[in-house]
Image (cartoon, rainbow, N blue to C red; front, top):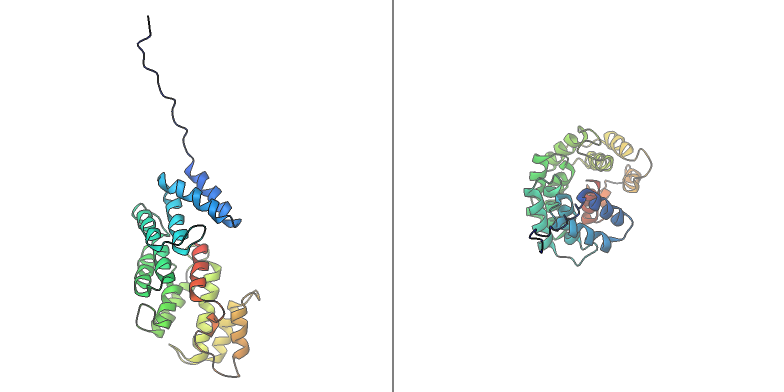
Amino acid sequence: MASSSKRRRAPRATIDLDGLFARGDALEEAGKTRQAYRLFLRGAEMGSVDCADRVGCMLGSGSGVRKDPERGLRWLHWARKRGSGPAAYNIAVTHAENGRWRRAYQWWKHSNAEQGGDEVELAMCLLEGLGARRNPARARALLRRHLRRKVPYMVSEAGQEWARALLGVMAATGLGCRKDLRAARRWLERANKDDDYPEARRVLALLGRHDPHPLDVARGAPWTTLVRRSTRAR
């Protein structure tokens, strides 16, 4: 007599999404971006918020996959709705990299309100008039607020060096504050304290010869490159 019991299916193996993300992260750090993207996408499709955030970033910049900012933004918004801390920041970056400065500025404001640490990006927008009306005094206040934050809580050492360098250039040119070459030199020397900030060194060399442009410190490094560098620090 045949058994009437039903055959049970073997349980599916549980996927370690944190481990999958870590593998993808290691591949990306090693420069194997295509393989990293495939792992992140697999994790995102299985519900990993961290993987979804990284998929959005890679689609937005075209790293390891054909560039598709709109699809990247969909993943980033999905991740944000599910609690991703960096998602708002990365939404801003995607808009900035594609020239949508008004949206980028608004999303950096959202990110700064939610988790803090985005004062340098907001200050750059206010200095350049990107997505917002130029307001050097407000930019200076944001940079000084950024420096009051603790490293590594919410901010990176690189971000603080960038803030000091900008404050130095502003003091040297009297942008948003009283012109003060001694203060400018102090800010720039602090930014370059490890002698690893060539832009700050170059502006220091300019002092005393002529007034550097307020954004000379950024010459040689496109703004979008600085944004991507900042994203990696998150």
